[in-house]
Length: 219
Image 1 (cartoon, rainbow, N blue to C red):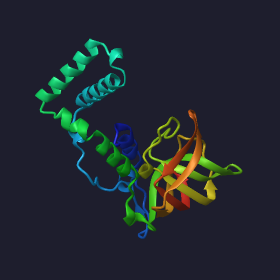
Image 2: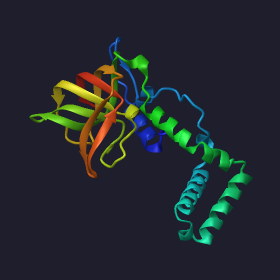
Image 3: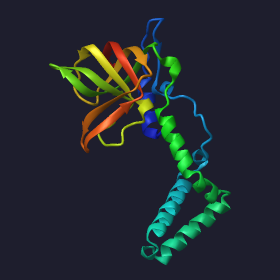
């Protein structure tokens, strides 16, 4: 669903180095924060070109529905041609569009779903620091995010790909591009916090919270 090349690349980068951890601490990656998909998503089987065509059809139909006189015949013909091409590829356009709202809602729910089995566990995971609160020169509260620059431009990663971290000790960080290892107790209780991005102040929701026992640079 949201497993983009950017997320996958960052995840692979951050797990390529695996230091030793104590037996009672489980080392996890970002993919471990995502529960198995709980529904059949018919859009997952479509290619990028098919999704683009389907999106164009939806857009043209919405324009025609809101104001038919503003939609030129050429645009309507284009939508009809794309629908015929998809039909020739055994894509049920009508069936997919009928389920569009349903699947969108299920995707939103899936993006917020957490792995309940992780609640209360001692874990260690890598990520990038998105500072929230400082104590002198140290960051004491932050979002741990899976890739560089997350939340700089909205929308942010899905809630189950963000961890709100609180640290009594804190960590000195040079900036948003420094990866770290965080070790502590994770909770499946979410946290929403305002954050100032380039696009303005936004409320960012993390699906997980963590009380950090150790934070160290990723080396």
